[in-house]
Each structure stands twice: as structure tokens, then as C-alpha cells.
Image (cartoon, rainbow, N blue to C red; front, side, top):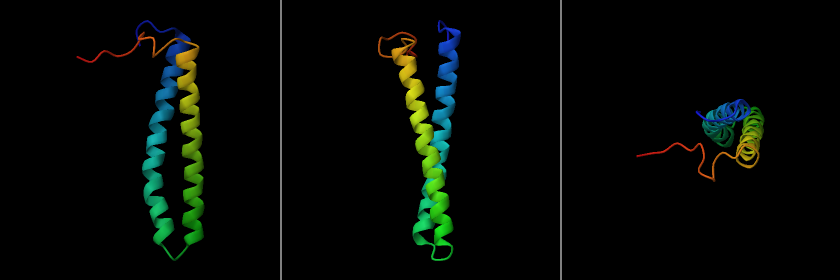
Length: 88
């Protein structure tokens, strides 16, 4: 983004990447959790897979939030109105 420091740009890129993979993980988790609930066969396998994906998604969400906090509180991006995309 124009006007951002190199460090802020790097944080923003990582923030966006973690946010994307959080969404992908959540989209994968929904059918996995459903399978875990309805499949009588290999229920433990589906439950273990669901738990693993849920923990990964929770970690990604935490990292995304942490990077967002760094952007706002350390780099000054966001609530002050600086570096926000303007929509017509």
C-alpha cells in the first residue's frame, strides 16, 4: 500500500495471508465437523481431524488478530484514517 513503511507493508501482507487461510480453514472445518457428527464409521477419525483443523483455524485467527493489532497500535494503520482504502 502506498505510504506504508516496509515493515507495515510486510505486516499487512502477512495479516492478509493469515486471514485468507483462516477463511479456507473454516470452510474446510464445516463439512469435517458435519461428517464427524453424522458418520458412525470412523467417528473418532473425523472428530480428530475436525479438532486438528479447528485448532489450526483458531491459531490462524489469533495470529491474524495479533498482526492487525500491530498494524493499528504500532504502525498507525486503521482507526486514525491513514492508509485506509477509500470507497466511492
